[in-house]
Length: 200
Image 1 (cartoon, rainbow, N blue to C red):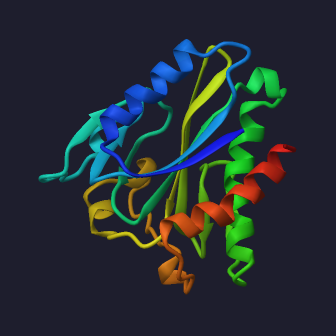
Image 2: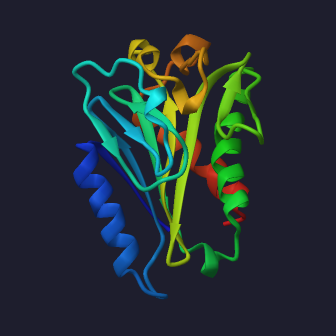
Image 3: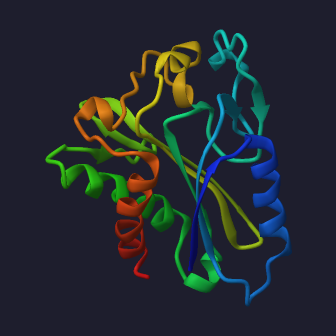
């Protein structure tokens, strides 16, 4: 498994790179995990309803090929992109989603924060507020897209949408929960939990 922290990257070129990686990989291509931060952007899943896009203003809106509704990505948010051949790894989509979610739950628990996942609404929550969002795509037996963890992010843009299709859903981040980490440190702490839950 190759992992890399790639810093701040524009959303669309990185998305296209994920697609190309997935479409050109073969049975011998090593799996990769990319940790990335994006400039402000709203992304809408394949079946997302525009009614959840309330007032985007000057933030770009991109229609993409993952599941889920509309969400916001921006500075201070860590993107975790697992590019994994799930057939080769013999794991299901639910296992991959759970491993992503539980890695955040474990990180929060290390700081005595009670975070939890909800099967009916993928992601990680603290006291009903959303800390991390998950949206995946599986193509050719491999995963791309992934998880957004709010580390130290401006939450105002989330008020311009119904996050993940839920009106009135409040967002939170690690800093507001008293966890003072930068993006790279968050990636370093998340990774072993994620690998453990994947059984790798």
